[in-house]
Length: 367
Image (cartoon, rainbow, N blue to C red; front, top):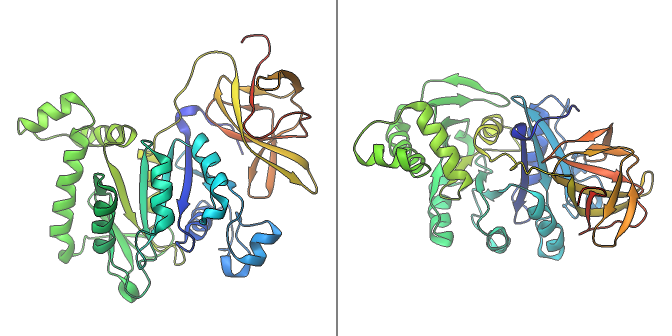
C-alpha cells in the first residue's frame, strides 16, 4: 500500500445500529477495489473486518477495524465500528480520528436507537447516510428519508436514488451526473428510467440549492436566478458537506453489491479530506490491542507533520521518550510495513513501551 498525500485521504467512521449491514458494505467496497477475489459473509465469519475469534463466533463487530480501500486515486480509511452500545468506547475513539461519519441504515428497519446515540456523539462533524438493504422485502427509501428528516432535522439531500426495491431493486441513479447504473459491481450505465424523472428533477434542485449554500458567491448567484455551472455545483456541494450544511443520502444493497461502487465514487469526491496542520509531528493513539502474534499494537492518526521510523518521539501525556521501530498499514488483520506516515493518515505502531490509548506522540525536539 503506497503513501497518499493528505488531499487524497478520506478518514471515514462507518457507524450503525447492529444488523444494518455496515460490515457487509465494507466487504463489498473491498471487493470492488479488487482487494478481494470473493465476498466474505458475516454469517460465515469470513469478512475482512470481523476477524477476531469472538467476532467470528458471535457474527458481529466487537472491535473497530481499520480497513483502507484504494479507489479513484484516493485512499479511503474505513473504520468499521461496533453496532451495539456495549462497545461505545470503540465508536468514540473512531469518531475522534475520522473526518466524518458514514451512517448505514436499513431500508427495512429505518432509524434505530444506536443511530440516534451516535448522531449526537458525532456532533457537527460531516455526515453521509447510506440506506442499505434495498433488496429486502418492505424496503422503502422514501420512508427512511422522511424518518431521517423527522428524527434529526438536518438537510438530507439524496445524491443517489434506488431503481426499484425488493426483488426489483437493480441499480441506482446518480443525481449529480444524472446517470443511471444497473447490475452489481461497477454496474452498467443505462438511461434513467422514465418513472424516476420527476424524482430526479426534484432531488437535483434540492442538491443545487444545497451546493449554493456552501459558498457566498454561489448563494448570491443562485438567489439572483442565475444557473450554476456543473463545476460550481460540485465545488459548492463539497463545501456544504464539509460545513455540515447538507447530509448526502445514498442507496445500495451491500449483500448483492449493487450501488456500492457508485457510493465509493461519491465518497472519494465529496467526503472531506483531512485538514493539514503545519508544524512538527503530532499524532494521537486512538486504539490499543494485544495481538497474539505481533504483540502490542497502537493505532494512531497523524494530525500534524509526518511520522517516520527510527525517530525518537515524546509521549506528551507520560513525558517519556519512545523509539519508533516498526510501523504498519493494516487492512483488517493483514499488514504491510511503511517507513513514513503522512499527515492525516492512519497507521499502527508495534511494541511501544509506555504508550496506550489516548496518548499523544510528538516530535521531541520541536514542541
